[in-house]
Length: 348
Image (tube, rainbow, N blue to C red; front, top):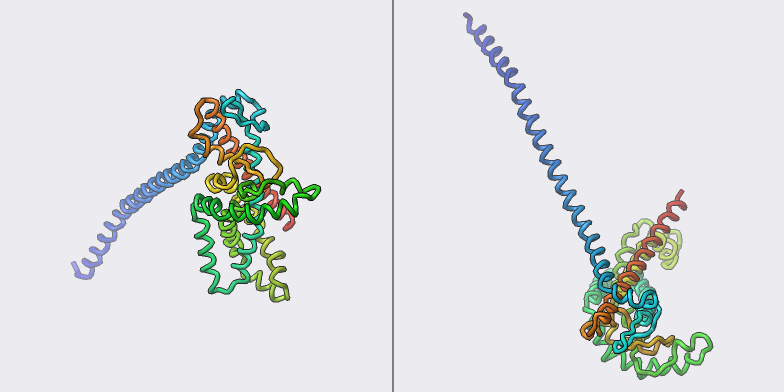
């Protein structure tokens, strides 16, 4: 047999063996791919279950907290009924409890805080994003974030030992003398100049909320593309025109959301308000008179609750605070959805 023919024959045998083993290799690779697909599907399913579990955990915790407070306050709700919401009585001796004064104090102090915090926070965010030199932005932003992290009890102690005497000596007497005699708004500024009251609590609360809202507004303003602002400056717009016509429309939804988050924090603040509000169950139109809030009432009297009805009334106040905060955040959500829908209609 010629050597060339032998080599050719051996090559054909090797090729035939390769083709015989190819289906086995293909089947092995197919099995590996299917096994990997099954493993990936199991891992993906496990990941989805973990993520859904985390989301459900938050929902369960929220509903559990609401139900536990509602269940704990059932005796107060059953005893007083709807009268519990609009009664100003709070007498632990005679076992008469009403939530009107704490609800009123909570809403008024939070409203004063937001009236102060929103414009100041807007000015701070505008200064840091549009006006301040680059070398100054980072230190000021760091200082604001530091203020946001200060415990509320520090604000309360500062308010009690520093701000309350200042209000009693300078601000309250001036307000009573100059604004107390006005026909419509006068009753808001009448009262003894003791420094403790809803106005003082609202101002201290506003100072607390300012760093929080300002940080949100600053981060939101930074999301505006620089090309849009530079185009506005290029056609001769002033800084205010750029902010009003470009920055605010672009970030309107996020700004409103940040404001309502600040309001939610103001509604639930406890220690700082407890120090400077006066903790008196008095329903008065004057902002200079002492008052009370839901959180302050719970913090001050929870350890003194010597009867099941007393304790149930305090827990019922906690449920009302939960409900008020939930309603505020729900209204904010509805407003944001309406703004987004209106923006979509305008684009069309």
